[in-house]
Image (cartoon, rainbow, N blue to C red; front, top):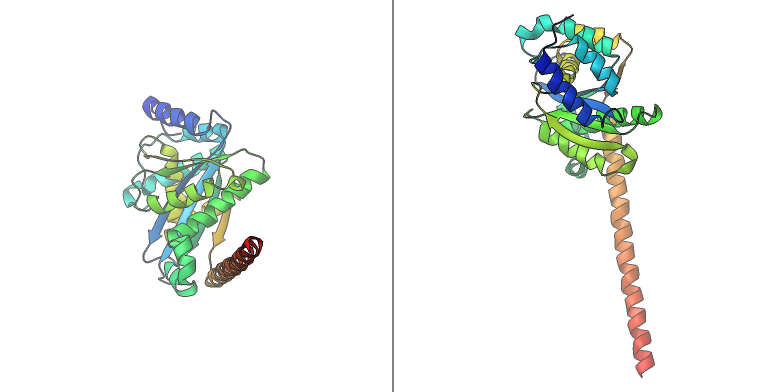
Length: 264
């Protein structure tokens, strides 16, 4: 078992209590990652990953993980992956990941759809977050507290999507916050999963074999169908607004005519 420093355990545990509402919320760490070369026949890939756990699960994780620094893409941290894997297993955490080829996003979606959804990162974040929220709802685990790594290159896209979802009551999102890996070491789990999904097939297979990973690959066909549905719904809404505008215009004309008749 890795040595857990008092400082790391105290800071991370304190933030955990804050984010979890002292145990009343499901705490979820989330990270976005892009691999320009990818693992699937040289194609680029975007992935978003999350690990979810109740207060007691993250406490178990912290008892097995005491490293303050970890970046999955850097080779110098490769020796720590086995320890991190063991800590994730010991904590009984639930993993979620969504990924896609960013080129497919532009190729198979309409501009109207992209104006609403944003970029490929946002699309993957939405898919991943939906999986987390559905899991929390079905398991009756309470509301969800999302934590994103502060300063991470894609944090703005990720946070924007989560804040939008938070405004919708049915998603059950209690809060969206940022933290540094140094202060909230639990974030390294999402970094590990997001990187493994696109860039390290061996480790991703080991993580998947735990039976605790929920996956969503956003295919070109799925993108096309979603884009078409959204575009059609927007067109229906536009038509309904025009119809309502015409009805109001007719009603106003009738009211004006009635008013003139009464004064005549």
